[in-house]
Length: 102
Image (cartoon, rainbow, N blue to C red; front, side):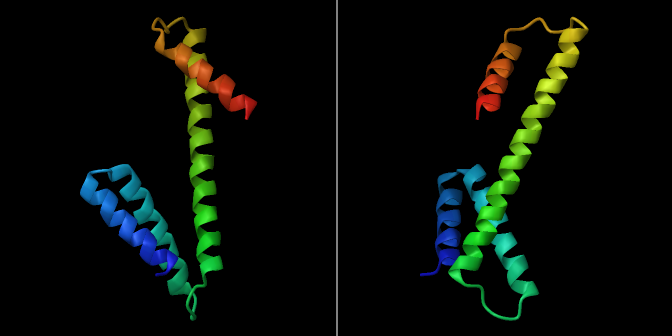
């Protein structure tokens, strides 16, 4: 069984279990693999597929870090204007501190 087949099988398992987040992530990964495969004339090797998956992971990690940065910026703007009154933003600051340590 190839890596693509394993991903597809796992995607269906997650979908049946109702884990839509995992299923959607695998759908995106399979779509990226398919897009690269369509641009090339020959079959993709396992190393090519792993490279594509690493690239997708990096894109997701970059998106998460950008989103955290926007949250912190938004929180600080609200705080400057005195509009923050809940304890929830303290969670964001803790997350920001942990994120900066990485």
